[in-house]
Length: 89
Image (tube, rainbow, N blue to C red):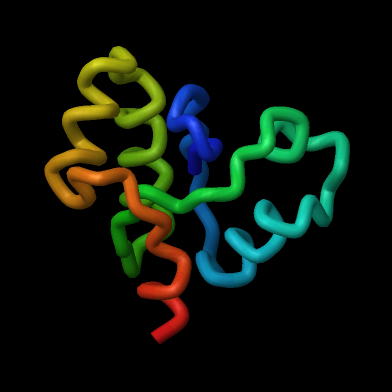
């Protein structure tokens, strides 16, 4: 997740990506990190069927330098477009 200026990056996991992005977009949890920084744009995601693999990958991505995270995002989404509508389909 990022904001409209693509300045702040947030990495997380969810068993219901569409629902979680909805929460971020609507600031369901107003004191959360994503709400505080107006992170309401989904720019990257990966699908995993095994929760342990998902957690390991989340930790791996969180450990990357910002530059590497941006390269990862651009490999899938070069224009940092909001992918929310894509995951709803």
